[in-house]
Image (cartoon, rainbow, N blue to C red):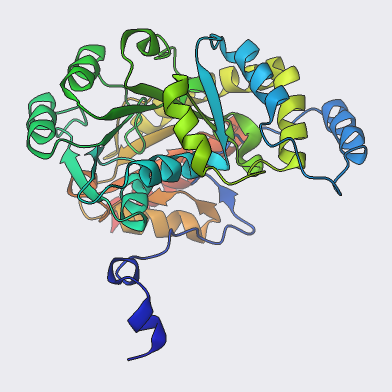
Length: 362
């Protein structure tokens, strides 16, 4: 037996690394990124600011100026603390590490964000996935039954949900929170694209935390996530957060973006309009089922057995989306399309129409 096989935990050996396809030369509509860049004047001002940074020094370990600006932009009360992570992924990992007692369990609806399950495995926790209904709604009875049976230390609820794009009912969310003896994290990664806001749940429930990211609003390259909640929770997470986890370039760039947040809001509002137009155009493609979305992506279902063909057909036209077929029983024949610019969306729709027509003729 090799040393790798002998020393690496078996559950890690059984995993596959998170797949990130090569997108060089492609129209990239697979990763829920904001397709719009900053105006030239903003880029120039930002670049000049970066020249002044003392990169020979460690960054502010608390990134306090960034947190202060987040409070202003997002309306976060001083009653609650903020912890920053290198993307939401690091925060999910911190939560799992903090709660990883022997036999501890993470629970989440499925299909959902794949990192919940992967990080549970990394950290040695049990993972329980509770299937959504056929129309991607929360199965409240199944969730409550699973909570009662497994008594999870941590529950993740994404609002809106990835990869389905929909919001779940506030009543169901509250029922799950009230049934939980553990921590409940509301993952609002796509909050910029919906009117829903769950910060008020912090006032009602001491065991709720709200997680957000700046990746979807146009700062994906900076990798900055955040979690908001009562200090007694975040004080414990601070103990295992690695020092200086938010580098000086990310802090300064984020602060600049937050001080010019109106620029990003204009883009996210445009993406809401782009989403509506895209969905209307997709509905017109014969055989394509389009699901409601409150995010910056749209979930669609291709005709039976055609998802992989359509995905490969788009790739041959240098358009990259996400094929979800095979990832979960409920996602059979499904594709996920990131909302691009108006021009990019038009290219995608035209290509899909060609592929759909070609398949019909055959």
